Length: 97
Image (tube, rainbow, N blue to C red; front, top):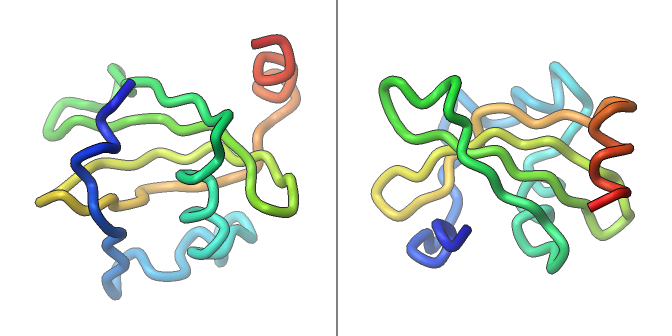
């Protein structure tokens, strides 16, 4: 999926800065790293795309932490909605694909 070609930078405003660290221990920097993982997988989040298109990104950080990220693109900026570690089922899926 080539939706990331149009996005040029990340959007971290007061509402979403550090919220994933508070909830799941994932830093904003780790979120950004996953977008540059050459083996990442991107899928359209069809269940949560009612108001705007949302996407799921599965990939790893520089330190090989596997993350599940939900994001959208607004005005050519990537806005991370949620980020967390992969669960067991997602890890198995990631390892087999």
